[in-house]
Length: 244
Image (cartoon, rainbow, N blue to C red):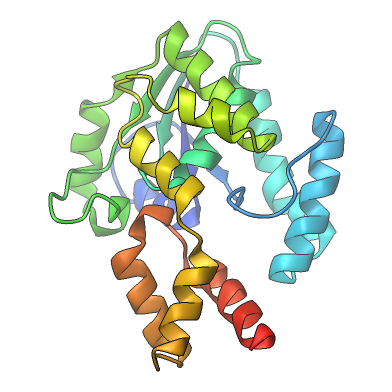
């Protein structure tokens, strides 16, 4: 019998999936590869670099990073050959970068059937994602999953390499590729290249919007494409305040 695995971006969605009748084991991607150091020669070195980065950015101990994050990524590497893997990731930049990385790990396992599961489409806000989904929506999303072919996997691997090496030209070139497994790739890449969240927050503060909750709300309204949560926005907000 084929084994089924679901990889979610974060714990909230993992908890929501557990409340549905969806079968399979859940692996949680607990990372924020949108920021911090990414360059490494090996996976072992990568974990070391990320543990240091995460402990500095989010005040999480290195031990905790290994225990909560690396252990889940190792579960990805240990998915049995011939399994089905469903990737539950949203369309914003935060999720996309984590997705590219997860695929770079999954691609090390042979003979997998890999699918992308998209959140239900919210026309007025493409970046809302799974947070507004009910259990029945999640089940519907799974029914509409999209199979990755060889080209889609290769695209994800290349996107990750380009992002990891901050190769802007290559990233721009890759974002032109058409793939049913990646929606808004061009828009997300352009936002990453052209919009500086720090400048946006600086402008808000200079225009009199100084308290954090107001800045966060404005950021998520106007720059939802980045997919930043309060921790990411707070880090930039604090940095801007120090510079003032």
